[in-house]
Image 1: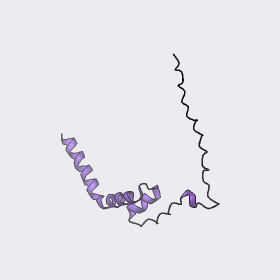
Image 2: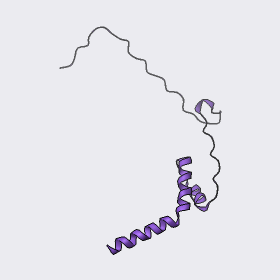
Image 3: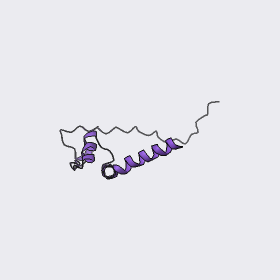
Length: 88
């Protein structure tokens, strides 16, 4: 029981000691969903992050950007009124 209590106290002290840094990291993750290693280091150091570049929709992509061409849709078979025999 003593070992558990000591480890619990060490973990609690570590988290409370870094609470401000952890709160900054949580806020940055809520704003961006994911961070690169360099961004995490900046957040933990208290430095501001660069603004995110806005996502460009494929319809507005310029000639230098690669976009996936639309896939042709397969034609649907024409409806029939005759029943098809089932395999037995």
